[in-house]
Image (cartoon, rainbow, N blue to C red; front, side):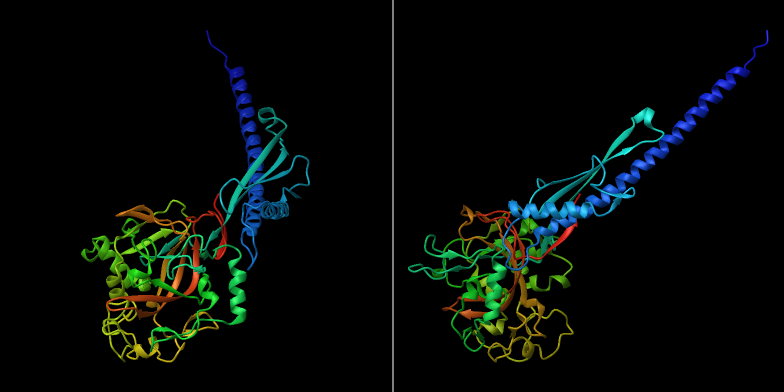
Length: 448
């Protein structure tokens, strides 16, 4: 008996047609929802960046990301900018159910902005309901210009302090001396010093300052004259101006010259000033890592420090460098390139007082080698190195760029390294008040 199947084909065709139309309709609604989400994401991005801008303080402005007043301004900015653009023909917050949610639970200097809108559906109502709530979010932060600091010289310098009555010189005495802060008051303080035009002047003939030290030198302000390494152990105490073992943070340092912590210490001192021209060994530190630990080397290492920084002819006997002498193996005089000019000494050791430093720009005079510019970690003397013996470490609170000014004699076989502060390049969290910003250049960026 012959079977008829015309009716079956018709049923299959109708079912297939319904499925195809349903899929097409669903595709229209899904595409529409993706468009809405894309526009909500654009609003969230704009709001987050605008809100994070409040975490960049103006010079002299006080307040951190955690302050209620700062967060109130950040929230207002975020809401304002998140609602400026259209989401499907109308601005956010102009339709029932629209919302902009701002939170600050992502960490220091970060803000999260979530945008929401309820939209009607067309063909997909039978599957998803008559409306759908669409959300998007963004997290932005005011971040240091560079999270990573490279080419670090292995010397730890304490935050400067104001000497109190009865305290020992060159040493922080708790309860007597006053450590001057690295916070949002620093910009205004440094601007006051700039306005007054007061600097400590220097002479290469005496290897000492030629004017009374100014208050600028007790703050981390550009142009401040600071001791980077105390030469005489009698004028320091364990933990202050200490050498560092940075081998845990070194990269590509497999050369036999650098295969131990003491050798790496010397190599980094010699080469930290020309790291941009060095393709091998380098140190990379994260400026905002609150758990970062920098090991302290045992001993004062005055001899290796002076040998790595000062030219041989400059320290033995210690005196003024003579013209056209070449010492490739020192920070202060080692040429960066073989084509450096023959009058190198004239550019780098002008015997006239203050001729090597331009006070109006807080920078070394043009022609002075960049090798003499080094970056050092700064720690808080109120938080002395943790541990004892060969297991001591510090947590940096900041990193600062210094220009090596001179090597000064103290007594036989000893010397002090002196430098000018150029700028603070980053603030960490190793001090008694973690998370405080200020004194660093920041940029806005999206992190989520």
